[in-house]
Length: 313
Image (tube, rainbow, N blue to C red; front, top):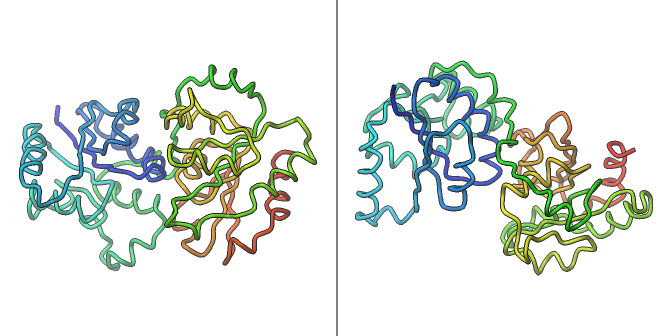
């Protein structure tokens, strides 16, 4: 039995995407122990993952904090790690590689860089769809992949019957109209217009809810929908996963919950401007579709509503 380390710091959408890769690593290392290094926002979430033996916390303090860095590297070295699967593929994890296993190749440290195709630069390979990159990384590392291209994030769900009963939710549409302030270009501005169209056509057939994050609760007051909270606070990631999975439909900006919905097999739409492509982020699924436009401000509520009715009718 060997100890295997997976590194996945975040973000939320990326963790949903990596679910299939983590499952494939487990199935190729069934006789081994799998440890996962992550950050505080996702520490408790990964404890729910059935394929992980134990979760390690990386506080991601400054690289110049030598006391912390020494402590973290020492705790990892104590595990006598046989192989690392770097699913974060960041400059920070590359830095960790140089400390833990200098000059290592994909036999010891599997990353997008150590498994880079011979005919591509790192910059060019990073333009490849996200799931294809994971699939190439794992296959080049000698693994058989069955789940990487079809992630299933349902392991993250928890029981939310108490929340559904409190808000009397049966058939409902979930909207995610929020974005980080610095990502305003990802924000579609016509959610209230869409809500009016849904209510006019479907009357009381579907409730319309928003589930704001901790920093989005005030913004949720501007949306004409049920603001779903748990004891006055934002619901956690596991509760949010279940809310999405049980929904009738999801409409979202290109944010973490959109990627969760895609890999929870939820029916829905995500709205993309010109900041990236749906192909690159591997978000389009059988039940989860994309509207991509050059300018989200010019995407009408009518067009989004027409797409939505194709699913709900």
